Image (cartoon, rainbow, N blue to C red; front, top):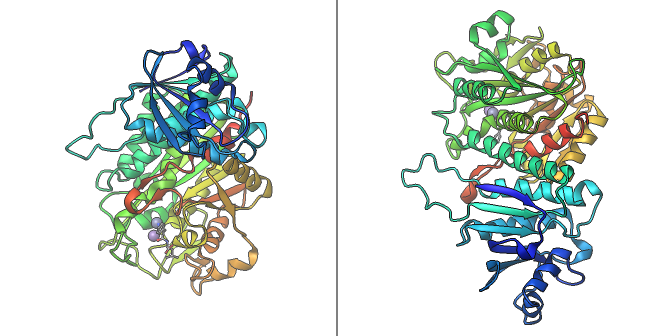
Length: 497
Ligand code: BES
Ligand code: MN
Ligand code: ZN
């Protein structure tokens, strides 16, 4: 697929399909007016005749002959006054939905001058080009590696996006959007890969491959012997019930100054979560292949950094293990000493995410982090609280929390903060160890974060519970690529110029 930006006049730019937006009421963007002029007023005629209503996200395709284009696609963009960034994303998504299985080999999308509400960060031409770039990659994603009959190959192979000029800022914004989409798609590929293939060593191989593909990424992998020497006993305790050994994967992207402290990302990488001896019910258990979604988002974000080269230092740590129930598995009641020295009574082997993360959170102290953000499909309770819309956010620092919330708002990859009050900590009391690994049914997402907070005292830290947002179930089953957009936006806002 070929994606490019063009600042040539629309009227003289050839493509199989020209795409413009038409509002429900009010003024048109310049692109639409230019297209209408080139088509001798066709768009106005169609609107008058009721063929185009302008309702947001509704597309119509009209054949043209003897022009620069074989057909015209018009997408409704709603009322000018209430066009939110979300409405704009919906309209662009509808365009790609209609283009991807259509007859056009090439398309010219002239929508980056749409009037959108909000601050420049979400409404400027740069912002819209970023959104269009991301949606191009996201919507054209397929995962058919394991189908013996490949879907018929797509006709569309070239998309040109119209920009007002050829300046650097416009190009960079579009390229960042494309890179973000590709990062999300990498995250989705890792998540969708079946768990008999995607195990901890396979994940480590992906990290090594990233280091091969990009000079800017360095990868180091700790095996079970190295972890044992260091005392990372909780990761080991989770991995013990599986024939697939655990791994601690470290990737470094150093685009900033040597003295700049790194932003540290930590990902939960449970490549399959059976629950262990506290076995999960069978129904829908296949979806526990997505329990490495946190680590997949870390991989996706590292790819975006490697492709766009921002001036920032980022260290990524993935705690990878498979939670299985064989004869070597941890038992409910086992007590384990974490890397931090604190002891944990494992009352439920299905609360394994926090066990792999706590050692990783202790390990990352050595990087003297600016901040630490962990991503994890940590609790079913988070799905009950927030559904599939928002990622759960818990943090020991308000400024960091607010910045992440803002990044989520700007990208539509939203998070919602839950409290981390001290009063919840006592739910983790254990009669026999420093803490238990579960805190009972009430406030399950919060007590999971409380557990993590005990290992994140030495730095500014935020936890993203992506149990509801990393993948979709049902007919649309598949990884979403979240929270890569949120993470990329946050990191870019901290990159040096
Ligand atoms: N990976 C699960 C959380 C999960 C469950 C995410 C379903 C998405 C969908 C996690 O390891 C887990 O099993 N958590 C338990 C914790 C409980 C035992 C305290 C849960 O949420 O039930
Ligand atoms: Mn579990
Ligand atoms: Zn899990």
